[in-house]
Length: 365
Image (cartoon, rainbow, N blue to C red; front, side):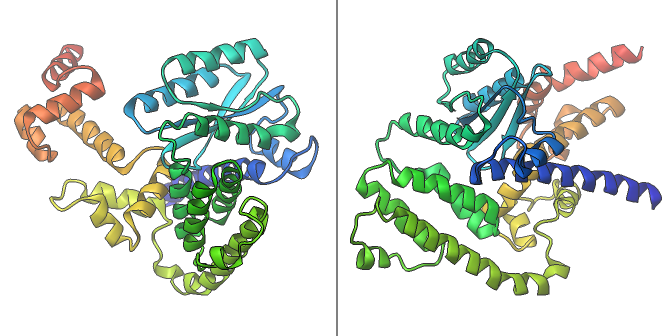
């Protein structure tokens, strides 16, 4: 029992530190910061080195496997030395947002950014700023740069809108507020038709009547954007206050926010025939979207990726410790066929299950 408590205390402490650091990153996008102020001190206390020479934001979409590889490459590029750190921010499901703090030279940083750009990714990069008070501007520039790469010509920020919807559904007010600011920056820059579509959808998400947009609009959408922003912010705040009593009543049985419960459930049920993310969502009384976002935010990977990792760990154990045939292991781990299992295993380890078993046995001898 003591060992269990110690392990859980360590997990809770790590989670607390991660959440504190993430809160600082969100606050950097919500409010201005000056050297020596409270937010500055909080960032440093939580390991975000805003006192380094250069600070800037980068946004990398994850709409393809290729871009996910570039994300990993970029993260290594920007965290490969003790004087440069990339801080990931879970703002979107479909994109990675990084704050980069570095004491490298401007030339070195620009060379690293260029390497990533040449790999073929559509990356939004903000200004390299020495003045910490311009950090929010760097994020806006990164967002603007990414929007300029939109080849559809629609002007509708689908990634940001999906993230805003999830934040509202989850009651994640800090994240919703950051996204709200960014979306209204977009409204001021896109064509009137796209701006109306964006605001219409935001009003619906905030449970406001979108028809008000046409009844009250007189000065033009861009001029009245700040007024609409405050109305949506107030509506979300009221909604949060109304939900608190219900959440308090249900606190005893509310499991959605407990990552330990989710992980336990996966480890106990991942080999069952009816196991799926949809089935899990119903068990935890939430939506597939909410559960998927919550899991990725906590674990840094999707549920399917996590399950695949568990299966591969189990496969290695069975190959090392038993004489089961590859086909039997594939069936045990619920793969459709031996061929699928072999392909997945090879992709993860760089060798076939048979070659892996042979290598392990040679090492034993």
